[in-house]
Image 1 (cartoon, rainbow, N blue to C red):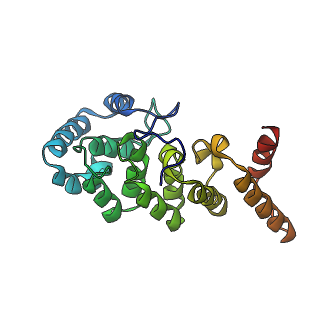
Image 2: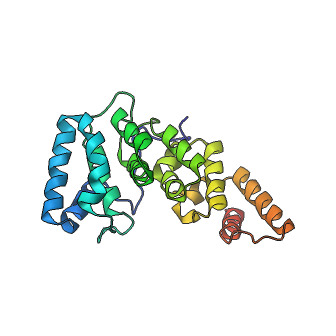
Length: 220
């Protein structure tokens, strides 16, 4: 189900690289052999989508696992895998089935890359099942990737609120949650109040990110 007002093509928020910037960052950082491999692989995926299954796992070994110099919010392997996903032809169902397969058949790093690519793919609601699966995993790498711009635009209010709570329960910083202040509503505030009260009653610390959120909502 779409979040209210969500467009069919997800708008990219400030700070998240679009496809052109992502490719430019890779062009700058990758050594010539890795860049040549990535360009050849991208062309191969565009011509033969089934080839992605064999190329996707090889990205970390071929392109490296460091942080991009000009886009430090991106790991090189996530960016390179996103470039391969963007080479897939559009699909009537939104998310190309080859992209979904890369998630379901991949390890945690490969799954994280698919989740990070969702805002850049014209996936419609086709990626929601992947986001929901990642949130159920409680793997902090996947949870942090799942609560990005795609979830902010596509998750309906109930699942989105529970995604925020999942971050708190798993220790994922709320800075990972895209558009948190925009989507903060009275029901989530109530849930945060309840969580803080339960923590205090149990003699446990309240997550330090909760009070500023409650204060922000009170000032609106």
